Length: 311
Image (tube, rainbow, N blue to C red):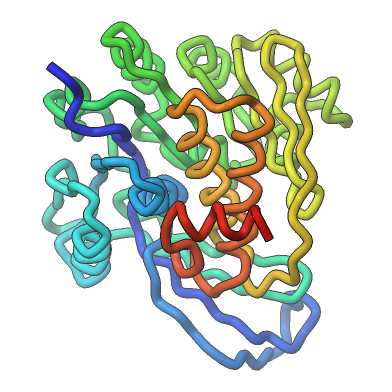
């Protein structure tokens, strides 16, 4: 039987509260800073990537855990509007859905996250029927998901035994311990790893991209697509390197740009497109999202991504 879904996203689900138009250059303790606007939108790396893959023409489903509260209902409603199957999103009474407050400065952003149910989500919250009904399993924010992290190697292994492919976005480690033992357990079962430059260097303890890629391959990674911001991206597959320059833009808000790259890259990978085309689509999706406020605000569909690349 053919899979019902192209993508099963497993991971954190929460809203983002984005504060924009901050005049100050950066956060400074003991001061008060003004901002121009606020946006409440769907957040979380895994959910943003899932929604954008749906917009790019893939059939998607999500497994996650939220509280029985306004933020949880906001997230489930957002997935429903986007056409993402959210039957695998479980609601836990008496618990609070997490939230991220994004302070968007001209040069970069600062994220403040209350984890809530995102750290409580584990393999037991994943519907086995959905795992059997998909062709690819994606997980984001590896280091935040302390409830899922220990079981993710077995989950990915089971998925791959069923013929699925798997992908992992490392995300930032708030504890900054970068548990390499945990990575070494999951990377051999991961088809593509999607860190950004800072995450790659921190997770490997290296000071150059080339050395870090070699070390991550030594930890079991097969295919590593690294997000380099305005510089574009680089891909390493079994030691073969491919680079693609970024698209020149003036970013409005970088929230979700890395997740948009993930969506474009995975979309092209599932279509078995060449390495350079995977990076190009990932870069384009990331750039489009950075031109709007919120992780899912900018990218509407595959046609928009193709038109952006053509321009």
